[in-house]
Image 1: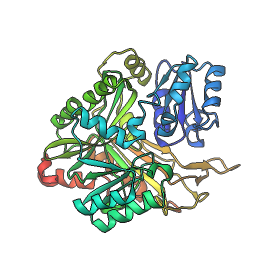
Image 2: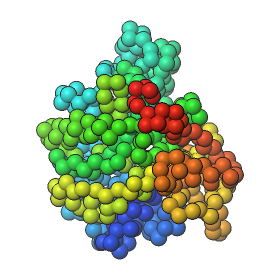
Image 3: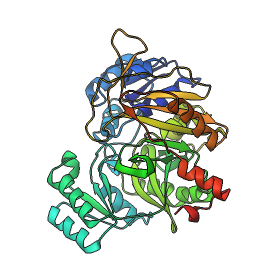
Image 4: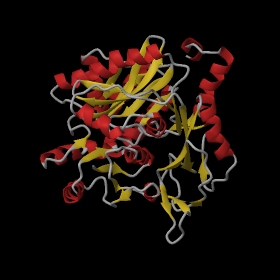
Length: 436
């Protein structure tokens, strides 16, 4: 099979690497792809992920057997509908179904209507009404741009003043463009975050192993929200029973709800959860693989990814095979991210990695005419992923490389997974109540 992955980031790099392992794969293309992907034999097309006409044309001319979409923007813009209208096989939600990520208000309404556990909320398109609601309800409180904001349109405000400032920036200044024409204001849930993804087609749901992401930019969960600074899988301090509860009360009900609403979902359903004292509740739904969770979940997948996607698209709930090894990944980001940052900064990528370790390129470019020399081309630049015999080993293997290297113009969090690790050490098999 010839396969096409739409996207150019670290998530798509990980998707391509796993697809390359399939016994069915003859060639993997990426659009636009990246220099980092090319190192692994992926053919970068240079076609923008937003250029649906050229994507469809390429898939036809090249005889692509299956396309898988990585980023949210082409999904929300309807790339799946356009491929299917031309009789091309593609794995991802329709434009209507992708509103599960494209509009937080759309997602919240379905959750409320179908009793899927989530935070209480109100949606506003009027700035003054939103401010009045915040003043009336107090803080802590969560302010979210309704539309797509590259993972940065969420403010967890600890004070009323912070929430009002966030509203001014999102709705008044339009810091995230039209994504901020409406906001969703939620109660602030407390607990442990959990990322749970599943392969979905209609009411067919095949869950993946859980992961935990770190959204804040700096150590100690300080600083602004980012697209994610690191992740690991499994999540040793969260019981399997909680994951099973999330599948039963959240993933499967949402798949059924979308069918009932006349917008059946096909693709990767991502549930960003908060595990509270009352059980798991939804923070957000995404309509695609998470980033950086994909870079620590897919390395653990032993099943053939092409087989999995084809089976799910046919309505089969197959059993997935996973390694018992843990995987931990840490993001190196450009100094200044998630605010303004400089591109074109040269940096070195250590190449002497141990088995089970992998660099996933996101915002990188190979310096023209200098093979193996890299420069920055984005906010989140590159991620080092390491498999280990357990959670502690995976973390140590990743940080051993990072802490013994110098990365010009980049920064990374030094405490990915440390809270869970410390709790495990102090409490043995730490109970969730000790962490909330």
